[in-house]
Image (cartoon, rainbow, N blue to C red; front, side):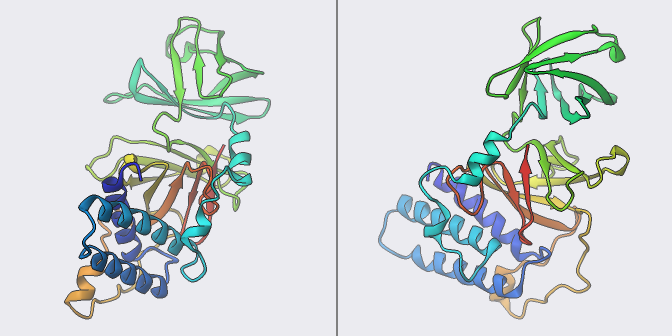
Length: 311
C-alpha cells in the first residue's frame, strides 16, 4: 500500500462506522468485523517489522471490511482486484461528460454545478464567502466541446464561450481562467439506478464542525424543489482510490428504536454506543479503482448494495 498508515486509520474508521448501527448491516456482519479486528490485533505480536505489520494489516483490513459490506460469506480478497481495468470501470469512465462540480480558482470557497437539461444544461453557482448568494437554474449552451455562459445575473459578461478539455476535466475561458471538474476527487454528480430521473450532487462543504466536510444534494425526481441536503464526513483522502464516506440522515434512514447493549467490557471496546449527534449515519465506500471488481471506478457503494455512479 502506498500509504499503509493512512489506509489503516481509514479502514478502522470505516469499520467503526459499520459497527455503530448502519442500516442494513446485519449482526452476522458485525460479528465478522469483530473477528477481523481480533485477528489484526493478534498479528501485531509477530516478529515482523512495524512497517510490515501496518502494511499487511491495512491491506487485509481494507479488503476484509470492503468485502463485508457486500457479502461477508463469499467475497474474498483475491477476487476484488483483477489486475486490469474492469468492464464496469471502463464503461463508467467512457460515460463521463462535461457534467460535474467545478472549482473556480478566482473563488476558492465557491462551486459551480453544471448538469444536462434538455438540449443544453443548467448551472448552480456560488462564489462562496459569508452571505454569498447561490444562483440556480442558470442556462448554459452546449455545442460539442463549447459551452456558452451568460454571467449577466451577477453583473458579468454575456455570451461567453468556454472550451471543454478533451479529457472533460476542465473548462477554459477566453481570459485564460480555467474551472477544474471534481477537484476534490470524490465530488461530482452521481446517479442512483433506483431513481433514473434523479441525481445526487456530492461536493466539499466547509462544515459547522471539524467532522462535517462534504454535503450531498439528494434528488429523486429531477425537480430541484424536491432536493434534500445531507451533510457528511469522509475518511482521510490520502486513502483514495478508496475511502469511506459517512452520510448523515439520508432520505429513508431512521434511528433504531433501541441500540444493541454491549454485554461486557470487551464488546463495549469493539462496539461503541452509536453516535447520532450529526444524524443517522450511513457509510458508503467511494472508489476510483479501475481494477476493483466489487467497487468500480467512479462509484459509491452502500451496505444494501445500492451503487451511485458518477456521470
